[in-house]
Amino acid sequence: MVQVKSIDIFTPLVDEPEIMGEISACNVTNDLFAMNVPEVSGMLVFLAINKNTPMKIAEGILRGIKRFMEQKLKSKVVGGHTIYSEWPLIGG
Image 1 (cartoon, rainbow, N blue to C red):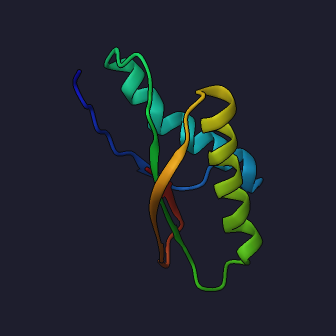
Image 2 (cartoon, helix red, strand yellow; image 1 turned 120 degrees about the vertical axis):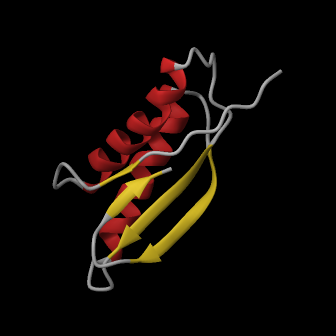
């Protein structure tokens, strides 16, 4: 058994938080599949948001990530890190 780790972070592409979360999870995990990794055991989420961003935006992004991991990959979010930043960043 081999453990493969990857990280990918980018800025939001769409205005709908849950869809953006799904896109983020897909983008982070597709790098693993490109390396022929057969399954993803979990995702550590990275989320940077502005202090003025409504909490419902962050919650929606995290919901979208969780939904993608559970429904599409039969995997899970295992943790992560959230910070305040002038620029929104999403990844894992």
